[in-house]
Image (cartoon, rainbow, N blue to C red):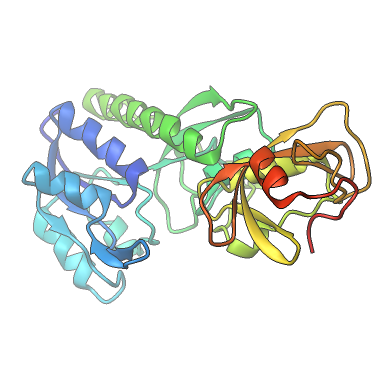
Length: 310
């Protein structure tokens, strides 16, 4: 089955790393589905998705349907006559008629150890929740949200200070490893199917900007994890003198304690929490560039004991 016809469906960098592995290992990728191009950056310039760029570089036809249930995507898929569809962070729920097209099924590469963290943001939530271990799962796709039978799992430890963005990069490589191993099983004709235990399932809903506001009544550990989990998007934030400030890195500050939200030092940006304290290490004041917490403290001449936050 080395020459089986594969259609790949994916959109961001995480997906592009997996598509790159399919191409580099000589798989017969006959088409790539990606989300429609969107405006990027302050100037809102329309830019091709990472998977579209990669596919075009290799002369692979690209399809970008705007809807999945009006029959357009179905006809596009049928025209490619795939044996197997590989999906990674495509960003849309696939209807049953489309899932039924490839005779070998649709295989998804998911950024968690299922059934934990079903949904749109599994990597970020594993960091926000302070997990020590995560990984990727390949699975047969079903109509539910990440509910299909599992094929294989690969695990990795999460670094104590690792951000979601850093973990994304590592899991993209692990995801590529997982699909390579999974396709080897298809070559052998012996692909396992392990049903998920729905009772153990947890959800990883899409992130929202408002969830990034730091609540210093929470523990230093929780704040440290939230900041890591929301970097590089949507980024945690707090307020100083009524102005918002993004926080890209916050480390636990050992040996400090004080009231929640209290500034505990005049040289380092250390703030008291409900349990312990955190140092705001890398931040970005409203309308300015990123800087260190120490530089911000000295520039603003903040006074020890003042309140940080609303």
